[in-house]
Length: 67
Image (cartoon, rainbow, N blue to C red):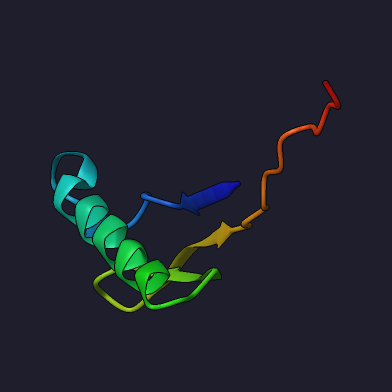
């Protein structure tokens, strides 16, 4: 399971919906995950805490049925 949530209701996400800031946060979280982090807080470009992410890895094993 992967969950990422952050608030876009501040100046860092202006103008027009904050597309650049949203993309920057997504890239930052992706970098952090690639470096081994599985959870953490998310900061906007102004240094404010705006959210968090969490990655839970589960090993999937198929049902073993005898034939």
